[in-house]
Length: 470
Image (cartoon, rainbow, N blue to C red; front, top):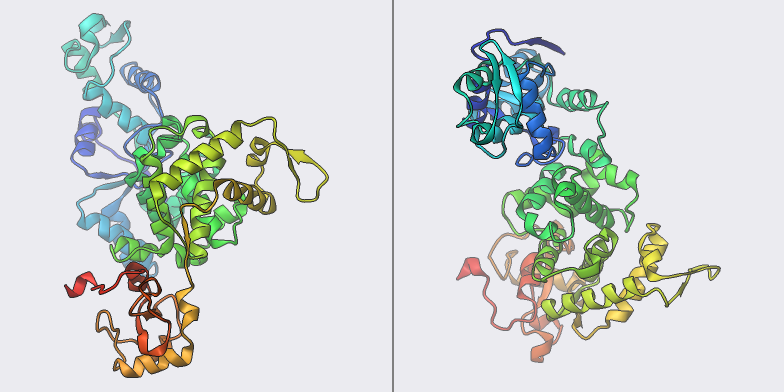
């Protein structure tokens, strides 16, 4: 990797840098942000301290960027790294000049100060114009002493620019630059380049208000707690209910298994989402529909249990009849059990006893399964409908008959059904035209072969027409 500091004072003045950022010329790749791009993990006190250091000429740490145009040319000349070529070409076509690898907190501090979101402290600054005192209304960027504003605008921000670097090396650079900082496990996972990482960030961004119901604001934006929570749900669904650190890491480092569950490509193409995404998005809507999570707000494992139960139900083909009432029942039951210090539960080996709150803190799969079994039993099945497994109600031979009878096409959409996919229940399923709850029977004369997602959408509806055919 080769880099050099940019030359030219005019180009790297604070004001010029701020204009470039506001003009959208600097790409804040979320993979290289310790926190979220919209919010700094620095509070206003730390942001103010950085602005003071600029005015004192004591902000030497460079902002690290990659020159998009030069990096693209380098890789096009080399011709061996298609991922890097695609990455930098896409950024160039979108009008970006740089990719920011390190410096998000500092650049946000500059923009927030210029936008008047915080004041300077009341103090004196020694400048080339003499000693300038900041007091009262003169503490904001727009109203500060003109000479002092000139000092701020003209201060050179050191920028370290990389020109011959791959997309993978950007990840390594980010980790090296931040090796002295307190990067947590999720910060490191987030830097890995994959559709899974993009999916996790997208779900977090789309559901911020729901996550903030049970995750502290600074944990959300600084520690990436929501990203970690989503990753834990993915691990649960992918690795047989395992959520240990190595499994969470594998969601990012070896994403093939997780991608088969999450199906991020389908999500980004806005096609029918995977079962996992359906559970994730609807679970967050459930929580958002509550006024408060009461005593469970600070217990991420208790909230995770709700999603684990929803994932179990989806896998076991159990339908929730009235979601608001079910969610309310879960909150009441889980909240009571969490607060109950008088009831003890035997451990699975019958050697010890624990309160439910103690069980919540344990992460072993066996203990977690036991804990959720207790919770499910306490909630009851008043709002649950135990569905038949649609796939096992028609044999492979019956599906072949349906395929021939339908001319090799879906009865719902008319799309071609490849013969070799007939027995792939994730794509195609045998469906009862007249549902069982309408006195229909799962016999060949009442069967049709349709898309799996349409079969789930149709559920127990009679005279259902797929929306694309309306």
